[in-house]
Length: 399
View 1 (tube, rainbow, N blue to C red):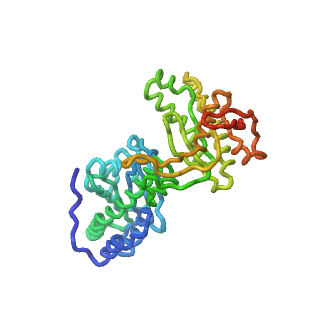
View 2 (tube, rainbow, N blue to C red; view 1 turned 135 degrees about the vertical axis):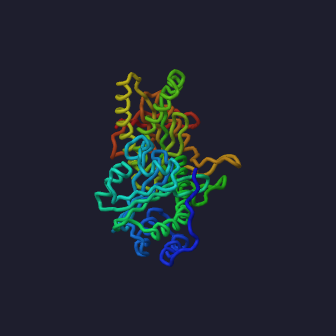
View 3 (cartoon, rainbow, N blue to C red; view 1 turned 60 degrees about the vertical axis):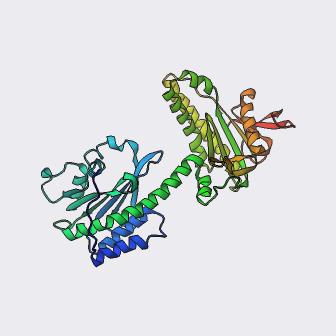
């Protein structure tokens, strides 16, 4: 990897102001796109004729490789576009400045005023010429441990950027790298927590709830879902097919839960634990709406699977409501942020009973009482529930 470009240590008064602001004036700004937009506006005011600028950040989100922030003259906020993992196989990337920078180039400079046949051939440069831009420059933005991101600037000034403009922009790069790395690391921490423990638990952990045994009591509707016959499938199917099946199944179940305000706390093999805190007045109704949409998604998924010769997937869902302890449990060095308590055990037992009773979704009487009148429920009688001394009145939801 090539070293960062040499940067002069003496700044002119105008770009020194932008460097000073980046260093000391952005401490209370959480979002990198806001910082980037204001930096571009300040650059214009300092005399550097920036007309368009982009910042490309690799974030390694579960769904996206990165994000592109784009600012152009007159904008108060930068536009953010997510970048898919397969972007490197598409024409928008192949042969682009981003391609060159991530392949090791220390600078990409393109004179947009000259004959296009003499310059780089890519749709990006044609688009910029069409908008009247005259000069374009891209540099790597170096974060620690060899991480590379990209920043670009373009102008419509006749003759393009002059040497003083380029020098001023280069002087910003180390400070912009530091400022952006802090925000990227913060966003990465938040993304990792949201990905592995859920958004609400992630917020609590970021707020300092990291001590073993710390937690709170939450009243919530609890939903536990389990895939039927998974042991047989995992024993007989190729590994990659099993992973694809699980991912499709969890997508069908999880997206409606998130859409209706639930929080998925755990995937356990082919099982899933989610809660809908009753601090939201419509939590129980939201849970059943999520179940309805998940059922529809599973019907569609089974139709697709049937078309490629796969057997349909069956599942069971147990639902209960009650107080749960929500917090950190585990060893001294490895914690899990989850919920425990009799209410969770009840939901798990009801899920197990779905197979015995031939029902897809079983609700406890405690939960059913909170939604009756708004949903059509089928009473299936009182049943013994393992671990509980008294029979429990159960209802099936077929919506």
